[in-house]
Structures are given as structure tokens and as C-alpha cells.
Length: 396
Image 1: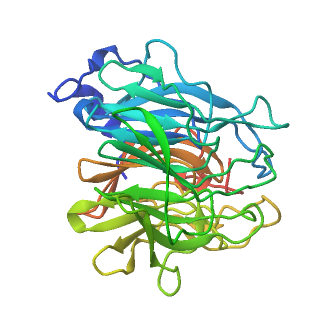
Image 2: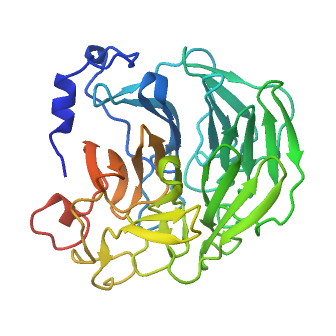
């Protein structure tokens, strides 16, 4: 685990020719710990972009707390530091659980949907608006015209001139899940939406993880209408965006990741595989920091890193002993609902919801060396044994 990278990176600020930021202008600030946000890797500007999310800290394991955000942050790898992006013009309203894609042709981030609520009770406002962020100028622009029905907890990806979204939840009641399995396509040239006719569809779901290659949307896991109390899904599907045909790549049986929600999936093109990271599984552990790989050529899952393992039962509801897990100190904290991107041949992650609060850390995983590197240290959310010292309970 590398704790000195932040200081070393700051000393070397401004040395990367591809970075568009003057490192000396960055304040010593980090975004508030948060989950339920979205992000992309902006390669030309060498930055991880992060939008919105929920910074509320649940009490007694409750999931309804909301403090939703509309800010945009960047982690600049040339500086090993964060900076809040000062956007121009109007911007999307505060929200969490939106879907995003990266349009590399036009150098823009595309955002759709999400949900908002002021306070911790009452109905949610479910969004259906679509926005694009010009990455060269950091200017938001809202698209005109009618799009897909409002939803959140859906997935999105860009394929050439098309931004594709799938699934999600359209319920305004936080205690009710109304999952979807429809596919919608935004033509990025004309900025018009249309519904894609599909066949062989997976069952409707929300909280799924997704990745994409040049022509396929890959979707893993998630939950149905009983996800708040029931088991989670562990199947893996592929959508051929050109034909609208779905194919089940793995049913989740045998040697495979447990069913889980709010995990992250990325495409490792060099090794022809998908990497599955984190999420909340339906076993004794709950939040996980495992990495699994699915070989697109072999059709098989392989566990790459085990991470923390379950050690002792809970003392009671939302009461965990310090030795609840055997902590893997070389892996990031267990989490769900964070951001994961594929950046320059590595898995890069930020934030998410952990057992002890919201995280604000940045890590990268080098698949060639099988090594995690901490790029920006967490200021909240880590369990007591990971920090070190004597603990009477899992959290401080």
C-alpha cells in the first residue's frame, strides 16, 4: 500500500505534457466522500471526472439518507491531486444514480436521468433529462426534445455515434423497485432518441454493472423488484448493439462471483476480458473488494483477487466486531456504488459506500503486476482495522 504517492505526485506537478491543468493552481482539497455517482476517464486531459452522487451517511444501516450533489470534480493524474471543475453556463441539477457515457469522437460526457430528493423522506423526483459536457471547455449543455422515460440506476455506454442506455428503476417511492429492461439509443449526430427493438432480453433489473467494447454492451448482476430484501443476480449478458440481440454469456452457476448489486465492470481489451470489481453481494460479507475476470474467449470466470474475507459474525443488526473480516491491507476498502474506469491500461476507482461511511479515495490496479496503488488517501469510510491501532468495533 503506497501512502506517499500524493506528496510525491504534488512535487512533480506539471511534468505531464498531456495534462491541461496547472498543478500549482490546485487547492489541497478533495471531494466529499460519496456514493451513487458517475464518472469517466478523460484521456486527452489525463483526468478522472466525477459528477454528482450522494454524500449522506446512512445511520443504522438505513439506505434512505439523501444529500445529493451537482458538483463536478477531476482527479488529475499529472498532479496526483483533485480540483473542482468550474463549469460554464447551466448545469444538471443535483442527482444520484444517473447513467453516463464517454463520446470520444466529440470529446464529451453524456449524462441521462438519475433521481433527486431534498431530505430523507418523501417521494423522489426521477429525472429524464439528457446533458452533454464539452470536455475541452467544461461547458454543460442540455439536449432538447423528448427522450426515454424517466429512470435511475440504469447503465449507459457510447458506441461510435450512439449513446445506449438500458434498464434501471422508475419508482418515485424509495421502498419500491420498478425495474426495466428496455434499450434506448441517442443518435449523437442528430441528438435524437429512439427505442431499440431487442430480442432475447434479460429479466428487468436495476443496480447492474456494465461495460462496453466496440459493439457490445455487457451487463452483470443487479436486482429485481425484491432487491431491497431478496437475493441478487449473478448472470452476465451481452447486447449486440447493431442487431439488438441479447446473449447470456454466463448464468452465474459454478465458479463465478456471487450475485451482487452496485458493482463495477470494465473491459480489458488487451487481455480480452471483463474485470468485475466491488459491489454488495448476497453473502455474509456484504460489501466486497474482490476482483473477478471473465474471459470473453473462454466464457469462464476467474477470481483475480480475493480481498477481505469474512471472519466473525455480526454482534447484532448493524453492529460489527473489529474482526468481522480479515482485512487485505493491499486492497482498497470494501465498497459499493462507487466509480470504476479503465484508464491507460489500469483499473481506476474512486469513492463509494462502505461499511463505515462514504469513501473519497483514488486507487489504480495494474493487471500486469497484480498490484493496487493508492493515489489519494481516504479521509473517511475505512474500517478501523485498515487504519491500524486497537479497535473494539469495526468502525470508529
